[in-house]
Image (cartoon, rainbow, N blue to C red; front, side, top):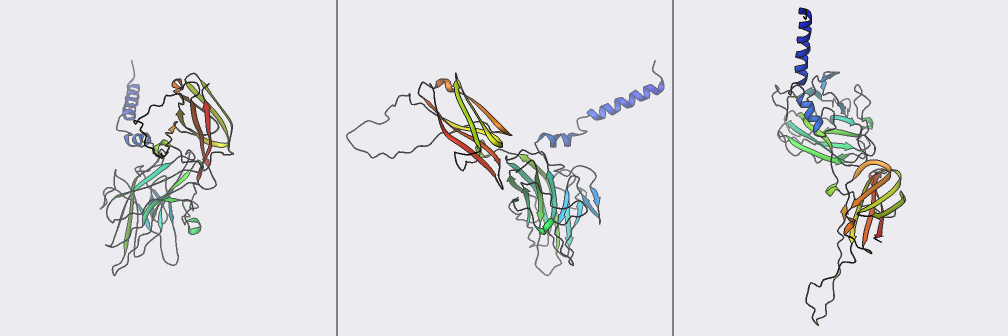
Amino acid sequence: MLTARWRYVWVLILLFSLLATYPGADALPAARANNGNVLVNGDFEDSGFNWFYPNHFLAPGWYRWWINNPPATMIPEYDDNRRENRWPPFNGVHGQVYFKWGSNYHAGIYQVVENLTPCVPYEFYMHVNSRGNAGTQPHARIGLDPQGTQITLDHVHNDLIGGQMPPLTTWSPEQTELSVWERLSTTAEPLGTRMTAITFANPFFVGAQTPWYDTWWDTGALQQVSFPGGKLPEPASLDSPYINTVQHSIIGDTLNLSWNTTVPASTQVWYYLEQVSAPVTPTVTLTPTVFIPLVMRSVPWQITTLNSTPTTTHNVSIAGMATLQSGDKVVVRLLSRRPGPTPCVTEGYGDIEIVKP
């Protein structure tokens, strides 16, 4: 028989277990984790906005930045855009807002995102709502710095270092309207394993009224996306010194390819088949009339799935060679994408003509 005390303990354990497994207990973080969003607190729904001097409230996971030009006070006030406020957030119950009366600001929030894959595209999007006197120009946008720069010293010193954004930052178009939620978006490839996601606002008003400015941010994400058509950007040349030790063979139904790169890079192959053994069938009736033909060739490149894991040893196997006859060809380009001094670079090697024995 359990004592009354042990029965009480077991009841508490059971209650905690039910709470931990209740479907709605942690539904929001689970949904955010499953959609590929690598931002920390991209929707600003993590509870407990952090207080910072002088009286700012900042969403966890984010830093403030501004350009301060004394003696004019250019720093806005940061706050939690709670649903009970006059203007609700775009989604959920929280958002990040900063605002000011009397003068404008260059200001925003940012986050350095870690553990990314180099030289694959990531899309950063965020929703913004700018408010102010009629005629205010929002000048709100978002950016991605592919070098992953921390643009302020820390949470105490929030002046933008050097007064300039990182030079390689890719920016979205600016917001175009007041008092509406607008989705801004930009895409960039990290040069290493980190990027900096930045929101920016520099609202401006000219008129007789005292200016006031609000910039509201909500529901953002940073997600890995594919290259257009799943295809790496074209290489600058097909004799890259970065690609070496190329080997190939056709064994049964499979074409096997391998190569090395001098630096870690991604892996993709472009190829097409030339079945020279296939009979040529005339498509028009031959007549004595003489035509001067216009010869045009459109190469039907097929592509393998991009392996974005950076490595110096590359291996690709392509099935479908059983239809080839002796003397038929497979034309191949070997491609790898790597970080360059500024943008990422596609290295190419080819065209390799592989004849089926």
